Image (cartoon, rainbow, N blue to C red; front, side):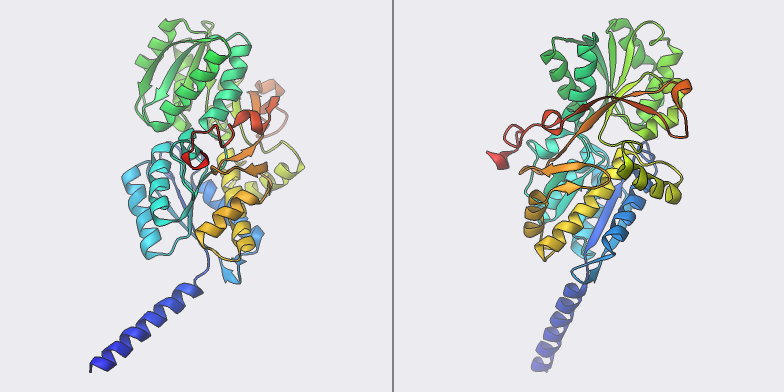
Length: 396
């Protein structure tokens, strides 16, 4: 009987190993699909990931690529619970998108423990490839420093030399305010104050009154998604822009501009990594995406496409889905796709050009989704720090 049990155990072990080896690559999209950032990335990012898998051919190393998705509701504890189940029980190899900086930091820590790759798209804090960097963590679309260099630097140089911040009360907001403040001060400007508001706030009146009374030339919105939209709409009710102050959306995407409409958003200056009407390649990708989703892609959705495509290319080049080997290839292979062209640094930061845009007036828009005019291109090596200067302990 004992020998029979041992034989059965060995057979079960062999069966499990065979099943595990037969499983193809499994990618997880973990983001906000129903809350304040639903339009910012949301289900559109899932569709972008599907496009990347299809464009790659649907399989890698002779095995199928599978996509799983979940809504983390902007709750780090929920996100970690989902990710742990994905890693431990469902064989997920890589998690991407990761809207919300508090979520991204938590998942990056878990992924490091599990020796799994995470590629952050929708979260902004520069800590992801700074002091919180890991051997398996990557940051793809943008970060708070790049946004600060673009919008903060440009507005300060144009005479907006006094600032007041409306800041989302969590890691992303703190990082965006800090990075922008440093750029403003480095360009000779002053920060007159700041106020923090809860995520997904519906009433910004008290915060906006403080901004108005500060007399700062620029009110910097260190928030995103619906919080940015509501801030701008309510600022109009208080006559902040009419009174001579300028509103700066420090993290705005095409989704938020679309939500506001050109009448309300005209004249806003913002920094993005992607615009659908940038060139022939971006237009071709955007038109395919539009047919599937009914909206033009934001930089989060285009960035998700790029991250999934780049990950699959790295798996193919490595000849394995082992995280060590794939992470090495991600840092070796150049990136050149519909989202951006650039390189990945030793700290996991994808370096590419950023773009400073001004939102068009309604009279300047000639077709649907024609929202931006390009003010300047910020070269990648100006937008992002070197790996050695990032604060990442892996590069010391």
